[in-house]
Image (cartoon, rainbow, N blue to C red; front, side, top):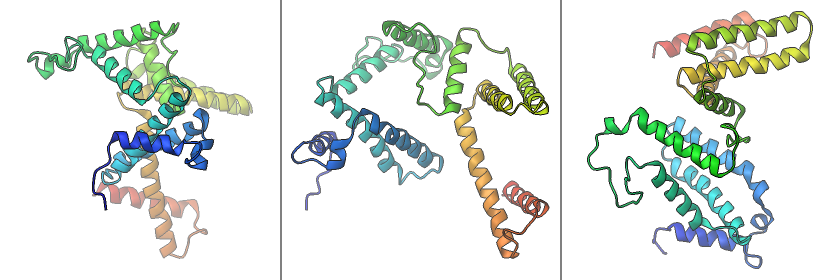
Length: 275
């Protein structure tokens, strides 16, 4: 038995063999750029889920699955003569060196910031410089809008937060959270007006505007709306499972009315509060 630990080169060789026309895997040979994208998104969410659950024993495997997606795309590119995995590593390292002159002043891995304190590094000036570098990179790609490189494949909540954050950087924003709350009330009122007029399609559209305004409130409060909603989903699931369990014990599952379910729901809230 070979106890040697596998390294990155082993992974690159494995990927190349999986895609080999003679010796490869039939499933892997059928894949292309587009077919892998859904798997990439799924693997990213599984990493986030493992971190949120603090399932650190699962994390190496989940991170490996996510890394494999990068290796997959690099293999496609190598087969087409576009670039390879080493080009990806080089581009990433060069970009990070360029964006961190406060850490690598000469733009090389060997250079250091010369004893500056963490407080000095964590300044508005550093953040502004980072944004300046990103703006320059967008200009090099002939981008015409600050919104150009916000990925369309992001989950809607995350993309809404990123779009509004980009717009805020050029001054398109409320002065504080109170302004966003007023906007939420305005959007909710428009939903109510559409429902009162029996305009169901308009009401659905207004719900989208309401959600976008709520995302802006999360951004203003410096919290990620996707993470907040995932946490709320988990909380809802815990409490509803308690309701189901309690009703099962009473022999009332499937028969209980809303008042009975609400009673157990409030009990679940109290249990969580008292922990």
